[in-house]
Image (cartoon, rainbow, N blue to C red; front, side, top):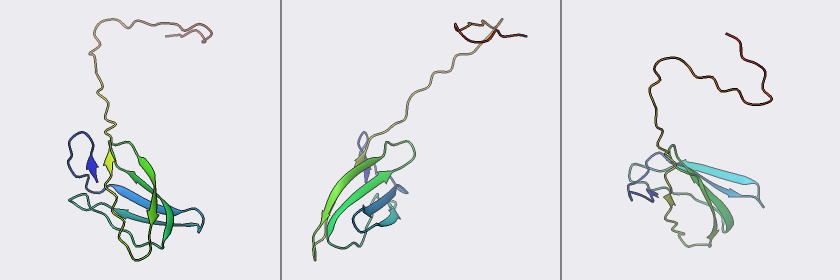
Length: 104
């Protein structure tokens, strides 16, 4: 599992493999290199991945009996730049129509 923007691994990312038909979910975390592994019965499963600072991703995975299924995941960063402006001087109060009057 890697970052789409940097191609760096995402260690500690949370992953779950769910089979809604059989009502089970397995969970694991990606290791330091971004690798993860599940043991699951053959069938169609939903793989979900998420990590702090990344958008979660969900996709359908077909697990075939006696075969390894390799799924390379890339997560999109969801870090947004926040601009903080210093406030100096008097406060400016903007009254939104329909809101109660502000009192000091």
